[in-house]
Length: 290
Image 1 (tube, rainbow, N blue to C red):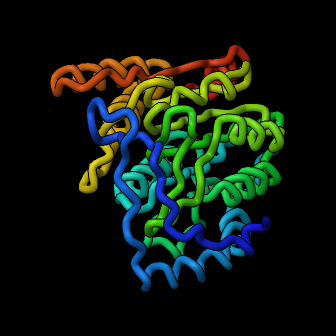
Image 2 (image 1 turned 90 degrees about the vertical axis):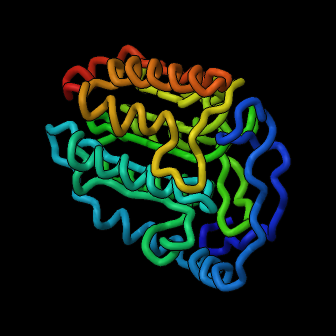
């Protein structure tokens, strides 16, 4: 199925998703909202334009520079019926553009009613199409892809993609591994921020990848309230630790401790964020000062 032929899935209930908001609620997320007809009309129209929107977004990227290890950024906001994921992608993208070399080489995929005409949607098809299109702009052996994904997630059921009460499915671990493998991008920095995001470790961990998740495979993560600007892990890692410490490993250590202290203070089950740094990407990070 091509992106241009995608249609909404018509309010399918997601019964097995895990909440990032409720302590101890291992199998509950915000229920799918009743679709707003006016938003749905705009969403249906946007789905018809995804090929064009991705092409336009990627065409605007600055080209890679031979002999320079350029950084390319792809951000994915999956659950579109809450503001926090859209805001988090926007903030993390800005951080990488201004502080980590991705200026002019960043693309966002966002599920949200306010961005339907501005940026491509986040579906399995658009994620794959965007990663492949960005790969075509990169030096696959030299440059670095940063993939940041934030949403709700379900235990062993993947990373959720929802907008206006429509379930676009979930990115499964094997799917994301296949997409990244097919892109042939050698150097990868992957962040998955969702409940049970540690499920991605086994499929994505390899020697050319830095992988950070906001939770273990059997744990929820927290902070996805409707009025939040950051998830708890996003705030601790991207807002506070990374700009200060500049290296991913140190920022992760500091952020994980901060999240654990907050969870303990509020009597939440620990989320246990995960990090895995491959030996080959470790050298690349050292060269870049990350």
